[in-house]
Length: 95
Image (cartoon, rainbow, N blue to C red):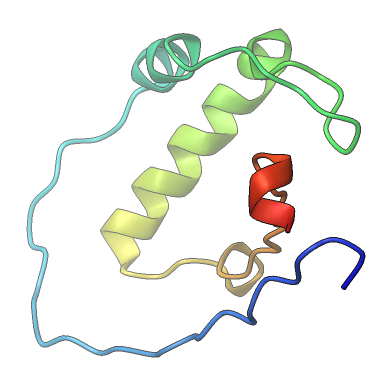
């Protein structure tokens, strides 16, 4: 058998909860910036800009989305999907 291993399709399950979230602390731009700055500074061909290079551009938006989502209980639909690309970690895994 030749070629790379094919990852199985993910299983997506919906869930509902009766839990309520009545109080939260507002996320600040400085907190988002600090959280991003402790992450490893990585990039790839699909995302060539290191995160730390754009943190000043995205921190205010990210804080606003977090705060609005928590206060309204709504997350924009286009933020609920993701694409996962699986990469084999080593030749051993590919065989």
